[in-house]
Amino acid sequence: MRIWGVGLGELTSLTLDHIYLAGLPLVIGLLLAIPLAWLALRTRLLYAPLIAGTSLLYTIPSLALFILLPGILGTQILDSINVLVAMTLYTIALLTRTVADGLGSVPDHVRQSATAMGYSPLRRLFAVELPLAVPVISAGLRVAAVSNVSIVSVAALVGVSQLGTLFTDGFNRNAMGPIVLGVVACALLAVLFDLVILVATRAMTPWLTAGRAS
Image (cartoon, rainbow, N blue to C red; front, side):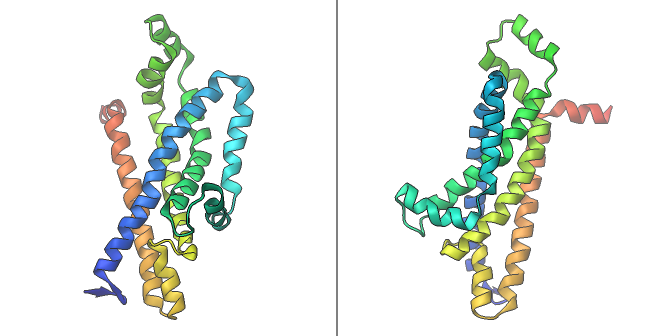
């Protein structure tokens, strides 16, 4: 079966590659952004350098980063690890400030109450502050997810296989079918990522749903 000149098997393979290259860095970037944001909030002298420094990562052109990373990491130009590292850096750039804003939005009296109950700073972070910051973090994560889906497609220019390959293939063959299919597939994938994050957010914040219902 072919869709706009592209075999279903090929489309499935490219989609799975795209999910891997855009999704895994989203998770890793979030896990790295949390301690960075927490450190920035706990050490005020580090707040500006950490937030500004991580934000500057997003100004690096993606194509340039895909080309430079093999020389830095000692990998091959077609190695997917280059894309994973690049997308992780972009995710950190987008999420560090968002996580810091989310943690900073937790009321002081809530932190003080947790401390009075004997919570250590780390336990308070995971048991109190992060759960309350989920809605803010989720909003930033949704932006990062859509951004990742979009930027990953650029890696097709250096030969890394994913949905962006449909753009280069269509251009080389002067065929609009693969290009349109690639655009549609990327858009649907971005919507899928967004829905997954929304569902996860609702599952982690049942009190918000209960509040709306009442």
